[in-house]
Length: 172
Image 1 (cartoon, rainbow, N blue to C red):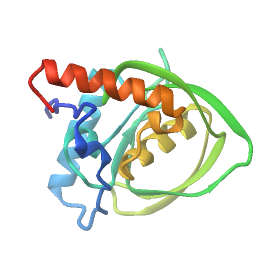
Image 2 (image 1 turned 180 degrees about the vertical axis):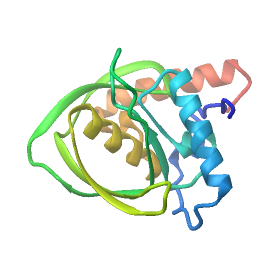
Image 3 (image 1 turned 90 degrees about the vertical axis):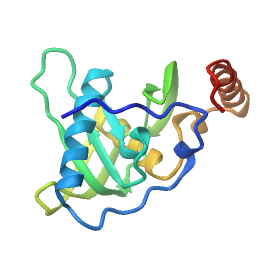
Image 4 (image 1 turned 180 degrees about the horizontal axis):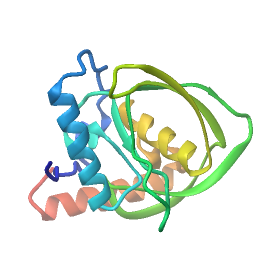
């Protein structure tokens, strides 16, 4: 296993729509192991493959907190199949937008269908932090960032800040 470099805003790769995984081969399984290692090291609660430069529909997540036993979950080709009318607010952050957090409103519960590492189709109901995490990560797979849920003024401020940082580091 190895740590993978994170793709950071304003990298245009973050706006690409990820492609479905066609084969559950050793390469995909190795990528998922590396994504878990990268996510835990960051530390984060979720990671989409596009955040490590791979535009495939793969998400790793673990919505446990503190001393709770870890519950790593890999989701391949995940899709939200329903969402509740009830909403909840969570302060979100993103490994691709370091040191920036804002409250985002999303459905409180969602139903998710995905392929497991064993190649089985599974459906799960998620609520609380897990529901927020999976919605955040599926947004990544669709080229959307959590800042897209903010007002235009806040979003523009964040984009300008990260564009300035990238210019000073010799990037975009």
